[in-house]
Amino acid sequence: MHGLSELKIINMKKILFVFSLLSSIYSFGQLPPEFPKEVINKVFCCEVRTCGILWGGKVDCSYMNIFSAKIYFSEDEGLYVEYNFGEKWGKNNFGTTQKIKNFPLFKKTSGDVKDKYDDVVGKFNTYEYKIYGNDEDHCIESLTLSLNEGKDYFGKDAMPFSFSLKIKVPNHEKGLIFINPIQVKNNICGQIKSKAEIEKERQLIIQKEAADKLIVIKINKLLEQKLDKEAAIEYSNLNFENLEVKSVIQSALDVKFGSEEIILTDKKVNNYISDYSKSISKVSPNQYNLQFNKNGKCSIGEFPDLDYVPQENIGKFTVYKNSKTEIKLTIKDSILVSSTYSTSNTKPLFIDKKENFYFKSKTGLPVAKISIDPAIDKKLVRINKTYKREKYANGILIDTQEYKTEKTVGIMKKDQ
Image (cartoon, rainbow, N blue to C red; front, top):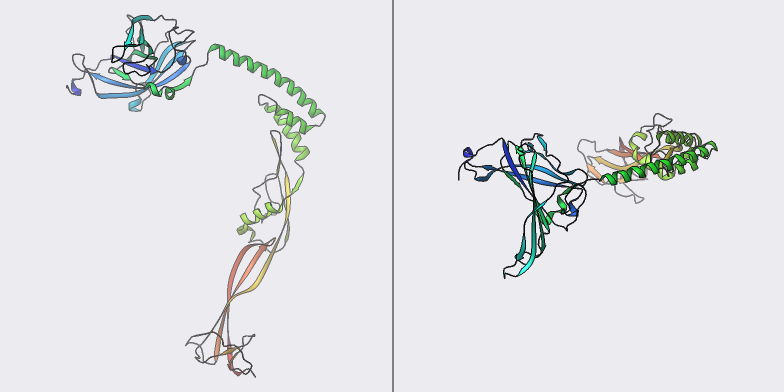
């Protein structure tokens, strides 16, 4: 095999598109009647693989350029191909062939299909269309359509049809597009609307616009009668958004219903306290009456704004409302967490409820749990206590702080 240096790079070179599909045979419009109906008004995505041409015309596919293409089968505009032959290099070198329409297909070959036992199991017909004398770039040069019936040589259902297109692409080697017939549905990447479909949609839009005009008249009458809710519900029947009417209805609803002040539910208040416990814990203990506007802004700057703003949905409209609640901040202080006692005295010591310590007890006082600390006098006991201070909002704990105390007391001889 010759190397890449032996490739003959030709400015005007051909690409062979082999496009395989599964279906039955029907067609109409600007395309030949032999075309299968399943391809009509469809766009098929393909992958182009271009091969090099050696001196002497031999094809070498060891070097390949790959880019994408789309084949359009339009009943109104005919057949054409789009591609980007600069895709490999990250460039947008788009090309589009001419649109061929109202073109005849000429039967090239036909015959029987025989299986391996030489029995006739199917039939085939091959049609061809060629454009002679056209040597321009981005031009469809020929098209071949193969139609099959019955079984193939191996006794399997024959592929109903296949297409191949040959076009000219500038500065590229001869190439191929392969599409597995089993993956036909996956290769459909677009739908083309016919002129009849477009006209039908246009007429439907005209009908909907006429209906909307009657609905707007009804809405205006409801607004004149101050039936704002009814007008908002009627707006839902419009086929298309009407921003002017929508604005008028929203303003009317805001004036009529937006001034209401909603008392927040316990659940919403508890969520508010839990979400912003850190911020609320910095506020001094007291009873507070909070008010929130339609944007959730709190009337007392020390408190955070409200994420949840009460609202009422009327049809497609939303009316935001003011809200209020009460929050009571309280503190529980001097909650004992732990007490520890230490002394250098190694003898058992007795302790009463007032934390007085004795060397002897005649009343059966308990023995204190003492830790030995040589730095403390034998006649003294050091008492270390840990307390906590808790802050609550409407009974919900929002903050806990600890603090410690220390004092030294003398040891008495006996409790009596």
